[in-house]
Image 1: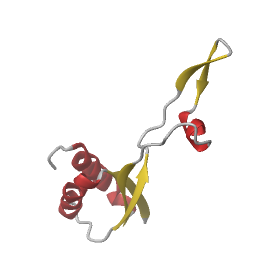
Image 2: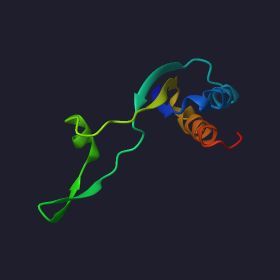
Image 3: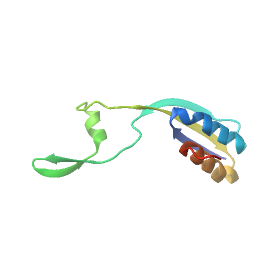
Length: 99
């Protein structure tokens, strides 16, 4: 058995559930959370020199307001042989492609 965890946008849930039903997955756990959705390095000037700073460090000291987006986390347990099929179905459904 393998555990698959997917983080998707809330409006993609219906499409992902339909895709999972089509590949034979019946049980899943869905939980609600918040997050930024991406992590990137920004370039700042410090004492006249360019410096890479991870923006999560800036938000942690409350210098800048942190914007959060609503996300859903789906947890699925599947057999070893079904992992590729299930992951492919979730990727296609979350990307908006038909399964």
